Structures are given as C-alpha cells and as structure tokens.
Length: 635
Image (tube, rainbow, N blue to C red; front, side, top):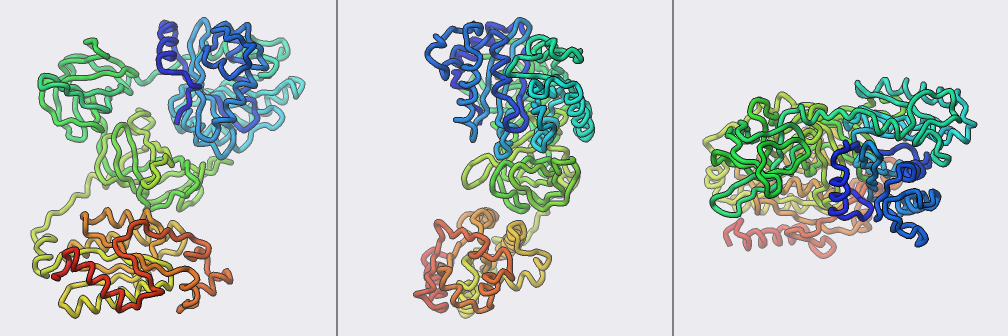
C-alpha cells in the first residue's frame, strides 16, 4: 500500500547508514483537504537543506539534479512537484519522504486530506511516532480534523503537533490562533489518555515558524516546527516491552541448520534466553542469533534476525516467538476497534480474512457494539460500518492466534481485514482484549458421529443449496426433489427461507446485514443436518456470493451442491405469485432483491436450471441424475 517516491531499497539503506548516529523520527502529516500539507512538506525539505536526489526527478530539468544541496532548488518548483506527484497517486498511495537535519533524520508519511482517502492516512499513521495535524486558520477545526486526530490517537500516536497554517491570511492574529487551539484542546479531552499537544502558528508558504521562530508572531514563545521535531523525545516503548518475533520464514538450507526468521517488533533477545512459541506453548532456549550472515549475541526491536533453538520445537510461519516469562495471549474471540476502508459495508456475520502478524486466518464479525461519531467522539448504535467509519466490534476466528492488546504492543495487537473474493484490504483493527468465553468453550466429542449416522441411512449426506431470485421456483423444485428422494427411501430435511423466518430467524429484517445473518444461521443449521447424515435441501435467495461461499466452507469438500435456479428478473416479476415485486416497485417493500438490493448469481454452480425451459419435476430429475453420476445415489 505504501508509495516511497520511487526510492529503491539500496538508496534508503545508504541514506540511513550515512546518518546512523542520528535518532530517527517517523511522523505523518494529516488534516483536511487544502490545509497545506504539500506546501508544508516542501518547506521542511527546502529549509532542512537535505533532499534525496530521486525526489527531484519530478521537477523541471533546470533543477540540474543538485544532489542533496537544497539551497539550489526553487521552493515553488519543489512544492509544485510534490503536489503533482500526490495528485497522481492519491487514490492508492502514501508518499514517504526521507530527509535530515543536523540533529535528526526523518521519515514523513505524506497522506491525502480527502475524506474518501482517509484509509491512506490510517496506513501512514500505523507506523508513525508523531502526527502533524494541519488546520487552515481560516476554516478552523473541521470534521476531517477531528477524524484524523482520533485515528492517530487510536493507532497509538501520543505526540501531536497542531500546525495552524495560513496564519498570513489572518494577519497573524493571536486570537485566531488561540481560538483554534482552545477548540481543539477541548475536543482532544475525549481522545486517548496521554496525548501531548504542541500548537504552532505557521505560514508554510512564507516559511513562518518552520525552521526558526518568526518575528511575525511575537506573541508566540514556543518552538519552531523543525526545532520541535529535532528535539521532541521519542518514547520507544518497544525496547522495554516483552520480546516478540512473528515467524515470517523457516530457514532450513540443510539438515544441520534450522532457523526462524522475522523482524522483532518489541523487546530484546539474547543467546541463552528462554522463549516460548505460540500457539503451541512449547518452551526452548535460544542457541544462536543471526543478523544477516553475522552471528550476534543479542538483537533488539526493529532488527530482522534469524534465531535457532536448542530443541526441535514445532514452529512454522505465522507462529509467535515470545519471552518465556511474559508470553503473549492466545484466543479466537476478541473485542476490537475496526476502521473500515471499503466502499462495501462491513456486515456482521460475513466472513473475511484477517492478517495478524505473519498469520492469516478466517474471521467473522459477530456484532458491531457501536460506532464512534467523529463530530463529538460519542458512541452511536450501529449494526454495520461504512467507508471511513470506526466501530467497536466482537470477532471470532476459525482458529486461535497469539496476540497482545494493541495499546501494549502495536505490532502484535493490530491486524488488517481482507476481502476473500477480491483479496483487497478492506479494514484495519486494533485488538482491545480477548473475550473470556473463548477460553471456556471446547468441542465436545461424540461417539455416534457423522460417518456412523450416514452408514445407518445408507447415504452420502450433502447440502443441496438452491439459490435464485424471489419467484424463480426454488421452493417448488426443492419440494419436488424432496418427494422424489423420499420415494426412493432417502433421508432428507428441507429448510425454506419463508418457513425459517417464522421461527429461527423471525428477529431479522431484510437489510444487507440481516440477510448476511440470515444465511449464517441457516448455514450453521445445514452443517448440523449434514453431521446427522441427512440430505439437506436449502431454499434461500441467498443473494451474496460471500455468504454462499461461507456456507460451502462450513462442510467438507464435496458436500455442498450449489443449484442455481436461473430465472430472468422479468420472468420472475411476471410470475409474482406473492405480489412482492409489485409492492417493491411501489416502494412498499425496501431492500428487495433484484429491485433495490443486488443479487450476485453463482459463477460456477454444480447445477444450473433454466426454469424458462424446465418444469419443477424435470428439474428434480435433472438433480437426481447428477447425484447418481457423482456417487451420492446408487445409479
């Protein structure tokens, strides 16, 4: 997701090595659109007198590629180049700038202010130590200002520069500065505890209070911006936190060597330390540490290393190596804060992929407890999350994972959510704590299992999942199939959409979130029926591919038969046996599939039935023939 201004890794490494004796500060510039971020970054680069050659490539030829000597660069030209570069990559990128002063080196994440790209800001903030929050002195504190401040604090940033910019357009009035500062400080009382705020009056275009304090603001006695950035203490809690090493790679070039590689997010490890690998909870001793191809006696947070163990401990990619005396927790259910980054809503019951550390698992959002209103940071009731919304949710995973609460160790408490169909990143989250019930619930073994019940019925159980528009004929065909199976002494059960809504799902409506939960519950019941050895006929519109895939994944391979009852919308609407389409067209029924709610047809169903050419009884026979051919029924 990151865009690094086309700087290749060797350039970055060489730059940092040249300044390795200086401390490093990672910070982000954020705020609302047109608050002056490009101008401010351009001024800092210009005034710092240290710019990477590669950052000049977007400038005019008369820049003459002056290397790192910023005094030969026209400031307006530099700002124009930065702004143009950001506009070109604004929809997907965070631009990272690298520069240095005499006292410190910096990496700045330059992020867009547009509300639709708040996800970019969150990406940049996730690794920052400090945030510069720009405010246009003419406009004051805006909703996007509050949103960015909240996201920065939620992501663990505890140092915030309130850069009140364009003061030249307000004649450097002290009252303008103080009114904005006071309004923001009052708002910031609702942010996370421990936030340090430094307000600075600026004019990025004129260079006021950027490198040195200006006599244009004689009433301001605080530091200039670069002076503050050079001297602000960077609280590196990572060194004092317990040792953690997410395993990214198992290195075994030969039988005599087996090492576990990754980057240390926190703590210190030394040869001879006792460590524990999670989730197996096996303990061993570190016998060797390699940094690159060099043996070292210890390694600290931020370093990429390979460790070797005294014992053959079962450890693989995705596991977490911890200090034995202070290991991480392990759980499969959590409360977490989620920042939603997709145009499609986050829906409870829908399954996503979660990447936490180097491990990827399947995740389901159980419920949204509430979302946070960016105007006042108050909790508001919510069932789902839309683009750029932040909510507190409960999650369940398909397996236990090691973790730390996000406010203790960012790297092992943060995660991203990934769409299972598109593989796009659609959300990021911060774990608050494990739900205690996760450790109290265990699978109960049974003696009479699916194999025994299937053998008793002399059949190979399966879910036959009928999907299609309302009025397509799903229930009619499912009913005909059940009668046909009954006639040949097969054991079945039938779950029909309308019937289930009279009981199990009577509390659900027809919003997208309710539809997802409707299918989740039915899929869980279907799984139980298959475990009982039954042919389970499920007749539901089930409009979303994601939920049909979820239902498929709940049973074993080969046990899910997707049957697409393929009826064009105009044909289904002409039938309109229940009069539902007429009511939907009149606006009396909301969220009706095919009218004002989407239907996603199957891409590769096991069986497709064209009801414009096939009767219900003919469709039932077609399914019977398929089941015989696939070994579900005797030929």
